[in-house]
Length: 427
Image (cartoon, rainbow, N blue to C red; front, side, top):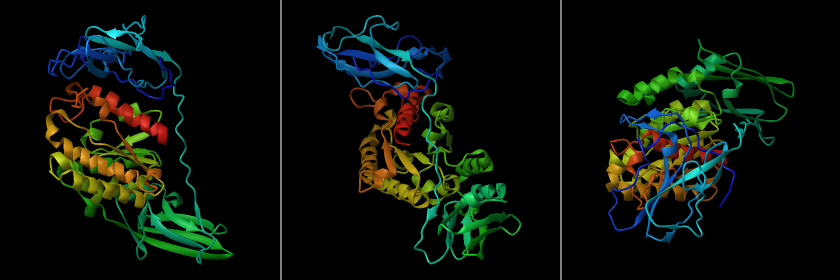
């Protein structure tokens, strides 16, 4: 039996079936047996959207088919944050452990994970350390390059609402929102923002000589507006943006992010915020939403799930979708060079299997790009969807809503767990 320390599987009271865990009986009957690996952590009873009552020990982790009288291959250990996995057992109570080397499968089978409590909140999220850029080779004593990660051009900077609100909130000392490089002996006397004149003033001293830099702030939010309900949601995020912490983990993208309603709690102890907007495509984020909802907050990490609507709704195809995703991560990296970007690969979905090849092509484009040159230092891909597949590679309907596109609450347990695990390993 393998015993490894586990870092994650957050506790969510959302599970599969009202009685026994789901058996995948929609697969062709070919005489093979079905083995269901059940996560088996008891939580309070909950009511599913179907109206069924379910318990947390009914969550399906993996399902395999094999011939009768065969040995069973041991799956990868599941993850549950704060617990150590103690093996697969023949009953929920964890009395008789399955021996993968000598126990033969003779009938359909349920095996249950056993857990040993280890700790509460042992993981500590690394601090974000903002380092000044020092360059002794410059002719100037200081160069002010940008504000809230937007470049300055001809003495002015085009900002959107969330960035301007941040400047106004710290108008007496807005230095943390300025992007600059200086010589080490350059003293920064003050950095202020005047909301009336919409002007940033930076006063410095070098070798006894004081200098002043003045930058005009222009509100260009309307230039990056999106349509309909997307704009309403974007404005709501902006209106509440002062409660969004800087230098944390930002979740963004389309409905799979927006519908992850418990993401803040599920990602703990990682501190995160979720600005997902259902229905959006890559172009929405590339042409405006990233500027409005990502760049002002200087996140330490950005987690994106977007692109599936390009393929299913816009019929962009896998190649073009992959190219657009690369354009998006490049744009984010340009504005946020110190931020790690995590792209969650697009899921296969039960009702849209005709797009499987396009989804694979789009995903592979990003995977190849992440592995190119030194891109892996800032770009990571997360395969959170494979865990939702049946043994035959088809998405398991139990992890999706009736529309066959969006994940159910119990699908988020596994999918979200993969996202959190990747961040814990790479932040």
